Image 1 (cartoon, protein in one colour):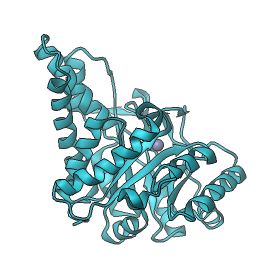
Image 2: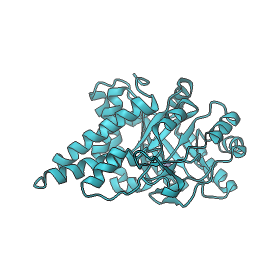
Image 3: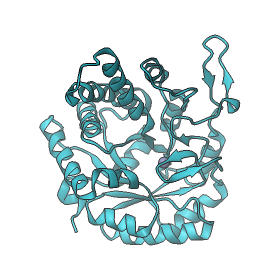
Image 4: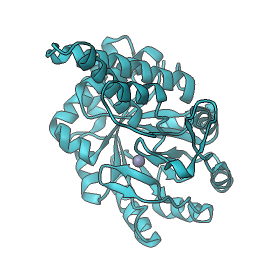
Length: 333
Ligand SMILES: [Zn+2]
């Protein structure tokens, strides 16, 4: 067993407390390869933003659990090399689906895990989440639970429709499980197709889809029940239309891909939402940049020549999120 502390990582406790007080949110960026990790660390180090490196079960299988541990350790060393003296980096399991998976991650150096029992009957969700908390807290590892169901597809997690979190359940859930943060459902959704065209209206000028608003009344009701408790939003990519257009222009096919408007996420970040999960946007940035190189330079076959521009595009995206959406810049000097 290796402790995350030996790897130079931190848990989410202190950074969430500061984020709630300061009215900003911590970025949770998913990664599964070196270029994504380089881009995340460079953006966080240069903007001095605390950052959560987030790995799903599928990403862990893709990258290999052993390699991943050394990548996280390497990320801390890289951050220091970039001049970030006290890197505030969390390695977090996204959507853990069993006690065994959470334990395996904690044993291999994760500083935070999510146990997602949101699809289970309420009492089973409580029991599973409590079991993970009881184990994780012995090692000072923080745990995220979830109440309510998000629509969309993410690895093995998928649902046709969302069910908003019931604010009446949150006090009981948090008290009985001992969870450190709570993911709630207020209308965000996984993937690059967060809403179907018939859930949206169309902007008559641009012809673009306009998504329905998030349920801020649910967030406010949760905050009233749990003042100053760390709230998490999943499925919070904005699906930048410039990337969707680039992908479609250079041979891709993403009709009507749509995300959460950044103004809504900014508003949530100023409230008790202190972790915002972003995955699809970096996939889109990477794909758009790679497609452009393949289109413009069909003779190119050196991976560095297309993964390099992809990495640059992701770094730009991560910095934009930190500076203009989450407000987490300068919060980890
Ligand atoms: Zn999620």
